[in-house]
Amino acid sequence: MAKKRMSAAKKEALVLRLLRGEDLETVSREAGVPLHKLSDWRDAYSAAGREGLKAKPGDPVSIEPWSEKHEPRGSVNSNTHPGGFSVAST
Image (cartoon, rainbow, N blue to C red; front, side):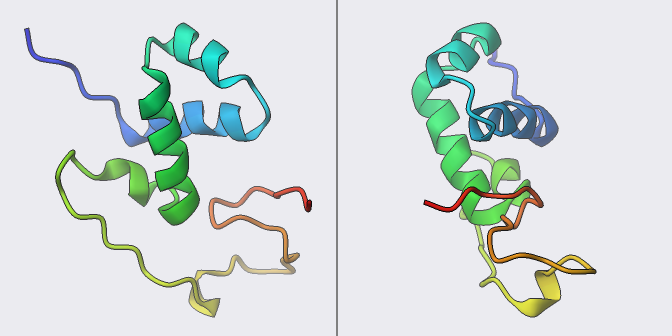
């Protein structure tokens, strides 16, 4: 039986749970996704947003450098992630 692929939207929902502070092991167990995959998806999302989650295994992912054209309209604070959510300063 072939493995079913998860859509980028579903991967994004899981990654956002992690970025909101949910425990990696809990999300992994509830979603039935191995820890290493969730961690890889989180890294890909951090680098390229949802586009980073769309790549098929083995396909190169092209990541455009961040530029002003990617900035959302309106005011943006320096702690806004490319995915549109705020990132806490450390």
